[in-house]
Amino acid sequence: MKKICLIVYLFLVATFLFSVDEEETSGLSILPVIMHSPETGWGLGAYVLRYREAYDMDTPGLANPMNMYSAVGLYTTEKQIRINISAEHYLSPDYQGILEIDLRKYPNQYCGIGNDTTIMEEEDYTDNSLEFELGVMRDISGSLSIGPNYRVLRSYITRVENGGALDSGFLPGSESFTVHGIGLKAAYDVRNAVIFPTSGYLIQAQSMQYHEGWGSDFTFSKSSLDARAYYTLFKKHVLAFQYVYLFTDGSAPFQELAELCDHDTMRGFYEGRYRDHNALMLQAEYRFPLFYRFGAAVFGGVGDVASRFDKFSSGDPKVAGGVGFRYAWDTKQNLNIRLDISYNNASDRYDDSDQSEMRTGLYFNVKEAF
Image 1 (cartoon, rainbow, N blue to C red):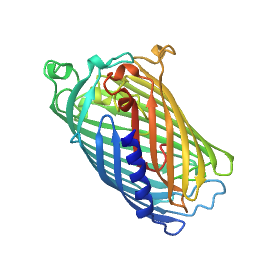
Image 2 (tube, one colour):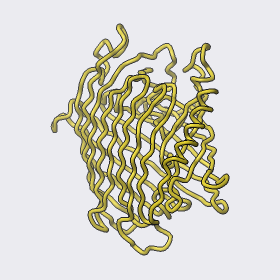
Image 3 (tube, helix red, strand yellow):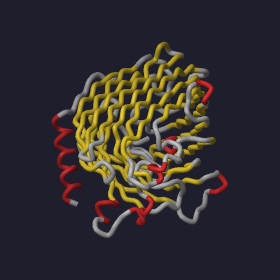
Image 4 (cartoon, rainbow, N blue to C red):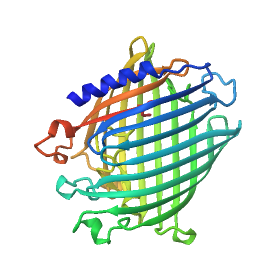
């Protein structure tokens, strides 16, 4: 509880010291990142976000295209390092380029594959990885865009537990590997804003193929569906929904299997705590103002993983939820700094010595989770 109070205090200090507002169509945000979660311990870093309206499409009810560039660097007390650089840039009103580079040195936990894994299966390991992704989206109808995507991932595990599943070398992904994937991505976007939508829908689908024929160490495919909807209940009170389905087919390394959670979906679980060939998640969030630039959110999610789609069961759902605090960093675009405090129902994940701390996750970030 003391750690939660300290982070809330640091969150409030950061919002007052580093607020930046520019003109209505552009902005620059530079802020410190202070975080704590069970898998990372304390983390400190910096986040930079630059955005600018690319074109005025003059389409009533729809958001104008937005160029967005971000960079984040993070170091944690668990000796994790992450550097992420991303860019979404419109080459013309009809073409958008997308670039992401992600570098990690990441001590982590492997808990097995499936929806019924327990704490007894946990193994510590360190994974060094470099990921590069490049795509181009072509506007088809003003709301629908589609285009090719390329991704390469290089992963090298430097530390495993003796005698564990990763130490045996038989588990795909337990030794160094490289995968190259090409695929197609489509998006249908009728939101009224890019950064903080209050109405409309966003549906994104992607399919990637990885094959040994073009340099990949594994042959498999990955597909995803991400559907979001936003409703304004009354002034500045927004209800948001997200549905996510992930599917991996073939002989994929365990790092490329569908995962139940990350920092934006199913907040409250370890990243990679549950993984399998299929993952299904549904989450909702109610966002509302408090006073001045401060707001709050209440969120919850339910999901699970399974070896096949027909193997999903309602008997043991994974549930997570919590509350969040918001500070309007940029009032023109409603760009928020968020601090989320979450909780989950996976009691088998924790030991008796520190249940309350281990059940609680803290997430400090910029922009809404979805």
